[in-house]
Length: 432
Ligand SMILES: [Zn+2]
Ligand SMILES: [Zn+2]
Image (cartoon, rainbow, N blue to C red; front, side):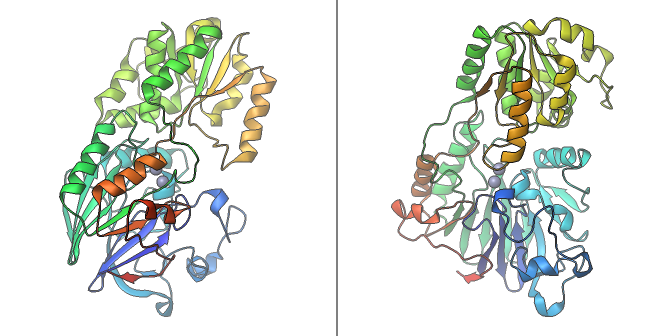
């Protein structure tokens, strides 16, 4: 059995993992690199379209898999491995973002939650196509070649995130995906650790996002809610929150703050869109949307199929700013021109775009808008990943025979808790 990492090596995100046995392979995740990690290509410099995906494969930016892409690679550049399926751990773009490169005939496995997020990204043009051949894997076990693959729900800052347990001819391999221990579903992550530990795995492929971030504190959603209320207790105008539209738990935190502050919860229609999509399998999402104090702000009309009473009129919204919390994503910051936030308003950045660390240009634009409208900025956020100490604790606790770190800038750090950490080079298939 061989394992190779084709993305996510010494960087956060862009995960691509291959497991192969007897000429049949399975792949986990197929993510985009963050703009700050790009090496040869970006929005300006792309591979030559006449060459299909060859330029990316030549530079090691994409894996040389045969029968994998929408356009075939030259045979001499391809690994002679038949890929039987691609399994997505969750729908963040650094795990799913390149899905449109994939051949229609390739089977793609994901959870209902990931599919809902993907549908949202497709609607917004963030993912450029609706891929075909998607199979929902919630609760299923899939057999491909020598591999038996089981998804296992864990907590992360997006609905539908899973780890994978893979039975292989050499023993059990577990891939954590992205994992969090302070979220609203943290008991899933703790249960995952207990279960993984009990199976004494051969290999653990673990994320390590926050290693080297110099901090171990994570705020729970309840603590974040209290911080939002603290701001609202001093700033008596309109409270504007910027949450990533797919971060259901954080949307709920703002909703809970609004309820406790006795304010109306107004959401831009993008948030109503994701609540509707997640509501198909998560009752909590629908409860927020249907709550009597939740209203949608769609000043130019809406395509969403919701009763008229759910939409707040512009006049009513603007006249009662001191009794409202508004969720407004960066894409719609231009709404401030009509809203003209009243004196005493405040802006809470809570995990929405742009991320200041990877998108300084848009962060500057955002700051300019806030300063134009005299909005003080508060950062009230907690990242959806295990802290450095939590992730090291998890690796020690599960205690596999071999530990393979991915999705981290400092894989060596795992040596502190494990005596057999192997650090795979990008694009090198290693026998296990
Ligand atoms: Zn990630
Ligand atoms: Zn993630």
